[in-house]
Length: 278
Image (cartoon, rainbow, N blue to C red):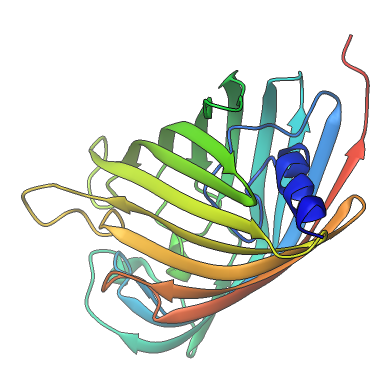
């Protein structure tokens, strides 16, 4: 049983790619040549905040959808987004974008912003060396500012990825830079450091327990523009894999004052061979 669990963790990167639900820290391993990974899920966040619009409340995002396409043995293209974000407002405070809101009652909704990215594995993992990769991603403003859930700004991220499997534990590390647009001033950006560290441990031949700390840090000396403040989330969960399908779930805990107090997430991931790379 122990040997089977170790083998699952060692072969797990071939089913990874995209965001490795329920985690968001990116593994340098890609989906695989000609492979397509599709993931879908939902999450609920209690005590979520949108500083630019001054809204506080509870956020339901469903469905969250991600697609990763392995365009070669070392590279993949990623598209992640969602159809509906439903927000139940519990508090309103004055904010820079409050005057632009168009909300009837205590509920609002909008689409999720769309993220388009690419990941490349630079160095494969060996028995003594971690694997390394890079990821570049752009977040496009699909969420409506009038709903209070969007900022109408574009964000760009570049990250260095590293990972190593030690016995039955898969450890992944991310470190990078994010350039976030200022929703209150045109042509102004705020730079943040992004980070992530995750652990996945095989409990049986099919099940894993996972944990992660992922976020961003804004070290601006002044008060950062609303929506670009430091944020960080702790995730504790599990995954169960059967063939090419994986189910997952996790508890979410906000770390900074701007994060939701707590939340839950759950979803499914499916991998299939879609085409042959010429």
